[in-house]
Image 1 (cartoon, rainbow, N blue to C red):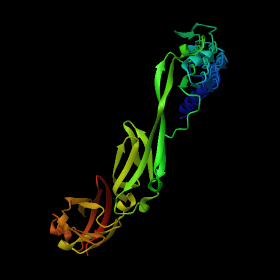
Image 2: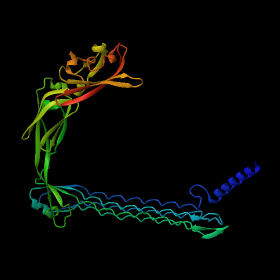
Image 3: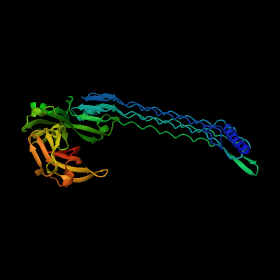
Length: 431
């Protein structure tokens, strides 16, 4: 026992000495020294400011406009990685060694992009008058990146080979840290673009879309408008020699307008839906309309020239469609039924029912019937639906008094071309 305890103590002491010799933390068992710290990354240079936008009236006088973007700012240098530390090689140890490596250099910061040139809106009566206007709307120059950081030095061996007993051991120098990544040059800013309008008076504001209530459209016609443009190339040739602008420009060709009215022929008054929001806008083929999903409608948009008439022949609120409340179970056997109370206006919504009927097996619910409910098994009593469950194709044993069942009823509510399904799940014991 004493010999066994002495051996255990000696082994524990050896481990402690190894930890003291080679350190803890980042130093591995056959590594000496500590890896150098990585250099910090250089920050990217800031982008240059864009040039100012301008409104120009080409009335025959000579004008100069400086709309250039500013140059970008240079990227910062990455910091050099630090050399490895505590590079003291243990001597005559019975294992191979390698030195800790140097820290990696930090990546260089990218150069900042040049600012964009300012855009311009140019009013004129004669296109030739633009030759009297000099514009420099060139983009700013991109800046250079910073310098990437160099890697730090690793720990070097003082003894590369030694022998302990019959075995020869070796030491390898620690690697130099990798250099940081090169940064990229900043990009040249875009030249400012011209928008040409063949008149000297400013264009009125456009309203290409509007969100209004049905009540607003019911009270008065509403108008939307948008300016039309055509795209062309060769802008620099239109201005004074030496001008610098984007090659592509647009020219004003007119203003499109559309006037909307409401033709409400639904049985329910429009006031029932007055706060409902609708959108007026230009679609791909002309005036278009969107109606809030808070209501379902039967509608049509009749467009003739610049006039658009929204015709609504029927409408219902979605909250009314969803207003089908579970009432109660009643009866047993062939007379087992479930009732629902309908909050929608009379006959406004068509309802189809389907049922999944389960009874308890040994431990789990077992499906006894699943399918749709024929209209002949549904009775409408005022605002109530009574669904006869007992006359579905369910074995009488599962409809007896005392039977516990789980039922999943799905009510599909339809109005015109739209529908939604409401699910109800209940457990019940037949009385």
